[in-house]
Length: 299
Ligand code: AMP
Image (cartoon, rainbow, N blue to C red; front, top):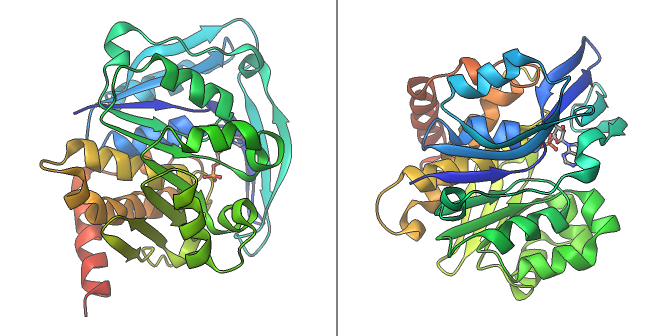
């Protein structure tokens, strides 16, 4: 089954203590769509400006990503710039230039409206609503977010939580949303806001899934070196939803494995700038790492 991915399609300028890389392919939807494409057909919904390099369009195509929902309009592509400290868990946003995103209204074709799996990657909650309004009875809807929307669009976000099956956020966002310092208590509170499944990302410390069948703890794949963690969260959720869409049987029976595959794709993302490493990986590499992770965590 296929996955509809909506989110930001961006040019990212990323600075680490060792290197600087301007205008890489980035955006929550780009990372999530490439990650999902290893497991299932993907349809991308987003907007870019006329300055968006043709090589990035070709890169989406190489991953078999359907670009019918990618609008190319007059103006500049969304540009995000960020800087990492030596401890790469600490990141500072240097610039957010909305460009063509300022007037973006996602419009879905009839075939897009019937896509069974929907991934509302990080983007303004009003746009996530706008996509959901157009969908025709999706089978499973997953939404991601970021601290910015908790700060400036909380009302829209809370409304969204009543419309989705699974909500993905990181640990600091879970604390901010609920006012709970304890993550288990925070997860319980988030369930009460609507979603049946809550997934909390904890960066290099893995992720927690909570649902009707209880909790599952997924480790992160241990890496020797992290080059650029930008998009790791988006890759995690993209891999997770892609795996679910590609799996047979009830969704509940695949969720734990989907957490592992999400973690594995996220690990590749961290090993290169932007999408440089993820786009060179094959399904075989992913399977090898998934097997290794399984060995590391079994007891
Ligand atoms: P992550 O590292 O998972 O937090 O995701 C980083 C990605 O989010 C980058 O590729 C950015 O282009 C994108 N991004 C940054 N700020 C925003 C924003 N305000 N809305 C949507 N996407 C954003």
